[in-house]
Length: 326
Image (cartoon, rainbow, N blue to C red):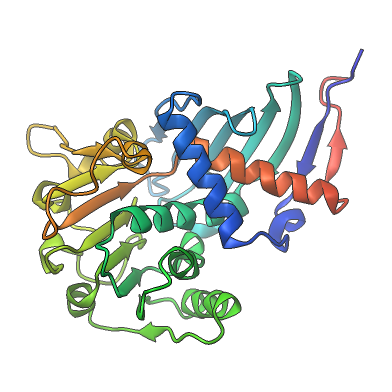
């Protein structure tokens, strides 16, 4: 009888593993397409706000099955304080559905920092105007560091790349990561958020409770694309004001994007992104549409990225093998 065991990978085990933007983007694209074809499963995220105290903590979990690597994944997250990066803990466990055995338990920081910008890049590639030449990133948190290099990977025609941030360490990390991938390209720091949004063909808002005016969709030029990475920095009217509205998941929009709802509690979208990516739904109705996309993390994108990182970590001799059931 085979003894079940898990590979366990710490944040340090995964931190310096090499995985290219193209690899991550491909894994995330395959995850969305398998879901759109009905091969994968992705129930709506379960979120539980904890009692309102001075800590204002939040916790959630996600369960899914990715048909590409044939693994089931369970992801959990807990943060004490909704904008506290120092007390944010997230992990994912993978189970191999081909063998029926557990596979890995791992810190999910690197996974989220890879699959989130990959999703942003895929949305921009599919939904930006064909002549898009400028992109703006608002926010410099961990999940924003890879955003601009991933965008430029799928949209090499971008000529102007702008960044707004208020945290010096975050700005430095974004610039260093961008320079690592595109040493010959310039990254422009901006201070006037409304003006930068008005100049951008693609605006990615990845800020939390940020020190900038709430981003208004009306600031964008006709044909512009705004992507909210579950951001509190976007005005709650953005979804209602959009000419065309997309969500990665309508169910998760109701959980993590409830502030975008109308007064009657409804939140209208025109398409879910997997349906757009596979070609069943249009990316917009007309060339002048201002498109708003609500991007919420989905475990069917976590699973293939986590599997790829775990496979690389095993090949590098990292991690521990633990027999939890012995």
